[in-house]
Length: 288
Image (tube, rainbow, N blue to C red; front, top):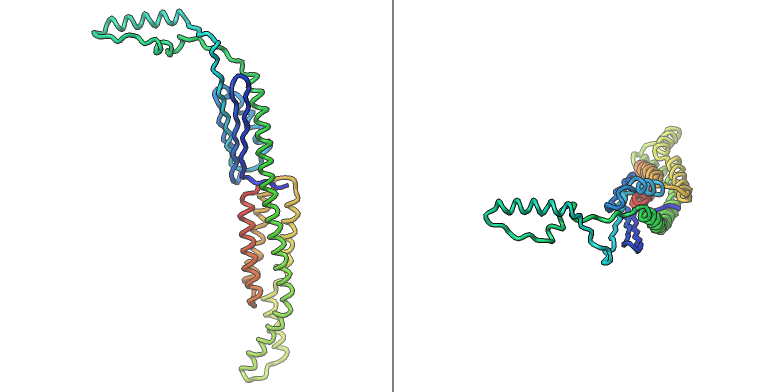
């Protein structure tokens, strides 16, 4: 099943010690480009996050963000480092004695000073395990979103393939009529000259014109590329780059058909083919 590169997924979880949330956004890109933003408590798992993303995503510009908001517990006592506080108060008293006018100390400002409050050591191992498990769930959701959009892209591409196949068949069916018209046109021009043409020379000139306007090979290659697109769409792997290459080949054959055209019907078919190919290319640009 083909997958789109455009998707979004979000998962949240209350861990009991705080709220954890992952957000993953995916956009079109030629290659896989990862952007990871983590809270301070989970900085150490950045390489593991990138490894998980790279293992499950083939292409796209991916922005992966994790947010963690720990719960503030009112039952945890405030632990003051008395030695640091004593040294800080002594330094403040020394500075105040040297100033002509001193401002009273603000206790809140003292508590904000580094080292005055002892911070409780947090065991991040459970948080890391929970965060990675939640990341896997978020990736599952992202891939499901990609697959849903990919299924829609597949149907659009198959519809365009059917339409192109009908145009190719229409061009093939019109070739005998085009050759007859070409012969009649050549004979009409000779008649205007009011001269008798050598039948052998006439046939030779007709063969030259037919060779110049022969598009059988282009028809075969167009049909072959259309069939290959259908086969590629059934693969269970990233196929965006291969489809992009096939769009280039289809466009090349459609251009050749237009350049060799000697009738309005094949010219119109060439234009219609290029319109369909461009519609397909726009969808392929969003395919992983």
